[in-house]
Image (cartoon, rainbow, N blue to C red; front, side, top):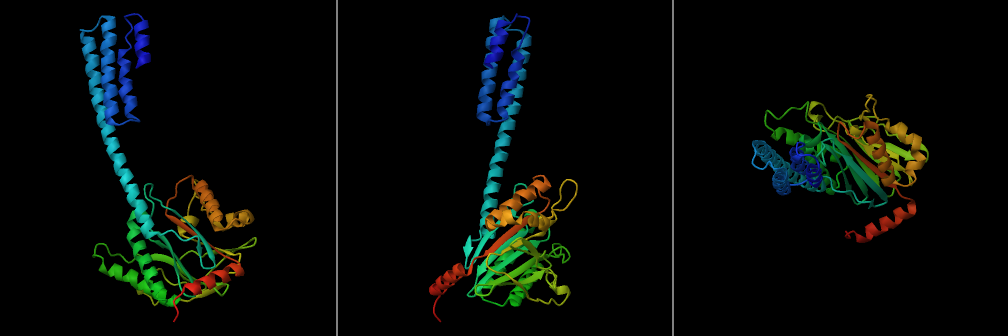
Amino acid sequence: MLGITVVDVLTPNYIHLGPLLISAPAITASFAGPRLTAAIGVLAIVDQLIIAAHNGSLGTQNLQAQALALMVVTAFVVIYAFLRDRERRALIQVRSVSEAAQRVLLRPLPARIGPLRLASVYLAAEEEAQIGGDLYGAARTARGTRLIIGDARGKGLDSISEAALLLGAFRESSRRHASLPDLAAELEESVNSDLEQSTEEEYDIEESFVTAAVLEIPDDDPVVNMISCGHPPPLILRGDQVTTLHAGRLAPPLGLGGLCDPDYHVETFKFEPGDILLLYTDGVIEARDPAGVFYPLTERIAKWIVEWAEDGPEALLQHIHDDLLAHVGGHLGDDAAMIAVERLNSGAATISNVASRACSPRS
């Protein structure tokens, strides 16, 4: 405004730069609220009158038309600034609610649980969401640690209710110290029960199911026990080797057990001190780059395993997270979740077990 005024005063009277003052409230509305935008608009009108007085055109119809146009534009940009601020406040509220829901639904995994070191990461496909249909959780039992990772069909906010239901059932069933097959059966029953309570329009067994892997890691035995319900196989990072934990017998995804008689077969794999177990959802391995190529998770880890794994689970997930986003160009097409679990050496495990038993109630 000052620049336009100075130039207009210094140029001949037949050159009129006053109309350029209309840019002042328009630019202000791009970064400021309605009050400041309105104030700048009023100042622009006053400035235009000052320039007109200096040029001797104060009472002309040309000035009246310019002033009226400036008033109209100012009114429009003030309304725009008001609506934008209202939408911004609503967006901030949505984000805060989403963050609170994430803390309730996906409770942060502890960095250390028993003889294990854990790290997790979640990437939601919805731009303004913090959570979606992918899920993970951990529960401590008297003899070890139980983990679940799953993927409710669909993505984003539509599948949150199914994820919340399954996580609640997992935490409750784990507290009752059921066996791993019993735990899987209870999760199946919970999902089916929720489907049966849905209305006829909502219920579609072909569209409502959850792939999941339920695992149990004993404190005193260097193994991991797993039941896979149609979920992508985990990976074991050992030294400079990456091993895929293929289940010999897959159970159907949770929610589809009513279509057959599910056999919850427990698969056992070695999980020794220093090993890192990587759990993930299909949003990771099905992420595509602009050319349509899937993200090669196993190949990437095998290529960089020495560099990535030596710093532990958190560093491993951070590297995969950055590499995955670079592969897809910054935005995922589906929710993605990962958990990395490292078994500590026997000395750390023994100290953890002694502390756990010392704090346990005597029978």
